[in-house]
Every structure is written in structure tokens, then in C-alpha cells.
Amino acid sequence: MAGQARLEFGGLGDALVFKTSAMPHSLARAICCKNATLPSPIVLSFQLAGSARVRQDGRSYVLHPGDWCLWDTLVPVETWAITGAVEFLSVALSRPSDPDLQRLLVAGTATRLDGKIGIARVLQKTLTEIFGQLGHIPPASGEALRIAVTMMAWEALREQVGAPASASTCRDVLMSRAKAYIEAHLADPGLAVAAIADSCGISARSIHRAFARDPAGSVSRYIWGRRLSRCADALRDGGDASHGITEICLSWGFNSSSHFSRLFKEQFGVSPRLYRSSLGLDPVAQR
Image (cartoon, rainbow, N blue to C red):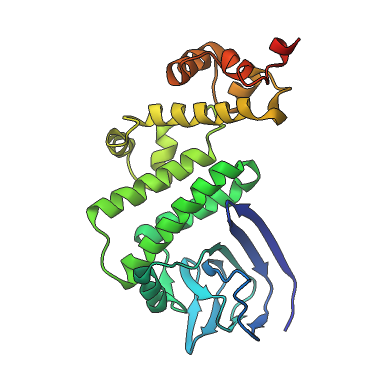
């Protein structure tokens, strides 16, 4: 049965993130044959609105808002709405090669999982934030976010169908969530610790304590370091040669070109202009 539907999607590194909204419908995806040359990702979906029944691999379950599931693209799947309009947010993840993750996948595929608690809740907020920023995330940052999302996905699955996550795993997931939020808002000069903490559901003090264990030493040093890296990427990019140094630093969240230049020299040992001119990309040096 067909109805009106809307699909929005974008790339996140090598992954695809997509949101689907549909009126009452039913869908069956059959697998005629397996083709080793084609990608066969695992799809992680969060139910955002409405309720839907899913059937795959002999299992049948109902998803309500806040639930999530994994389904295997190598196995036929059926889904149909049991309410009015439905909406879900999904990401296609690479099939794991690690035997432990493969066993975890078998246990968790085609099962209703709770997205309102633990790491799964953090993951849903992260994906929602990323989806809203897809048009503003550079490819390199997108790949870093994909890795963070993938790690959180497996830990969320382990938390619900496998062994409980250790304290160190929880810290790692917290840092991945915080760094994913920072990466998505790096160009915002108003990026603040309070917003990062709120996105993780913890206090600002806890964020400061978590980053004190990071090699950067503090959340502010981490943010400045990431911004400096993005500016250095832009200075090395021949496509950005027409953009001035001040324009580049302001576009990556710096409020002052002098502050940027001082931090850049501390990080790379030379001024931004010398850094660019050494690559033959400084339009001023070329005249």
C-alpha cells in the first residue's frame, strides 16, 4: 500500500543519515540474491513519531516513539504503520567484521530496543543534532562523527542485549557525545560549555572534569585545537586561496584575528601567513 512520504538524507563520512516521514503504508523489501560487490549495511532506526510494526528474520515487534531497532539489509524485511503518520531517523552503519560485534548483532537485530534510557538516549540526541547540521559539516568532520556514532551504536546495543558497559566505556561514550556536539558546532563563536553539557544531559562541571583527562587538558583547549585544525585545513586548501586569513578564522568560530594568529603560532610554530605562503597559496605573497 502506498501513501505520501518524504525522505531527507545526507552523508556523514562513509555513512548515510536519513529521516523518513510517511502516511499510513506498508513496505516489503525482498532480497533476490546476495551480491558481494554491493554494500550491505546495518540500518539503525529511531522511531520519532507514530507506531509501526516490523517483521524480519522470523521476529515481529512494534516500535513506538522513543524506541529503536537494527535491521539487516541482507535479510528481507516488512514494515507497516499501525497509526497515522510515522517518522523515523536512521543511519546506515558498516557491517562489523569483529566476531564479538557480529554476535552482538545477531542478538540485537530485529528487536525492539529502548531509546529513552542510557547510551541509546545519548545516541538519539546525537543523531538528531547531526541531522540538523548535515549541510554544515565538512567531510573530515563528518568521518569523525561517523566513527563516534558507530561506537555509540554498538555500546548502546551491548548495554541493552549484552554485558553492561564498564565505567571506562561510559566515559568514552560521554566524550564521544561531547566531541560530536563540538564538531557539529565548531563554527559557532557562541559555542559554550553549558550547551555541550546540556547536549550530554550532565552538568558543566562534569564536562570540565571529563576533559581534564583528555590529552588537550581542558574543554576550551580542545575546542581551540579543533578550530585551529580546521583553519589549517582551509589554509592548505587551494580552493580557499581567495579567502583571507581573517575570513577563514572568523568562519571557524574565532572572534579575533590576533587571538587566532597567536594560538596558531603556538600550535604550528609559524604565523598563519607564513604557513600559507610556504605552500605557495598566499595570494598576497604571490603578487
